[in-house]
Image (cartoon, rainbow, N blue to C red; front, top):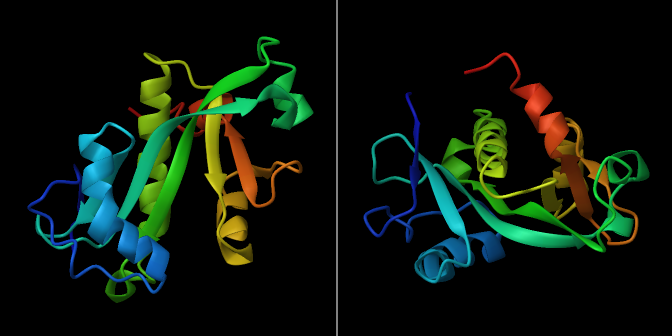
Length: 169
């Protein structure tokens, strides 16, 4: 099956989406379009047909305190109290599409968008709030590091993202 990424619009079937986590389902069904309209977040879907949502993720700007960033990354940044980052707020795959590595595909798409965006609007890295241990382990596979001052918060430096895509167009 061939999938494509698209910005979330009202033509996507949000009501049918179910990932097995009520909060993620509810957000997509009830709040995501409003957040997009209000410029609070951007939402992208992965779809096989332009209507069905196989998965989605959201991105928004976020500020994090410099002292929350891992020291090896913080020392490479300007010594401002707060650092601009990009928040990967939600990432979910519909139950009927799980097991096809769409989560990894969506994460790579999100990171690539973060990298491209960081060239026009500064972003020192990507922040995620892992919902549970399985989610944390998923993000760790891609280089995210836990931020000890905030439970379940993880960080990936934009320089690391840049290296991930160094040999890709």
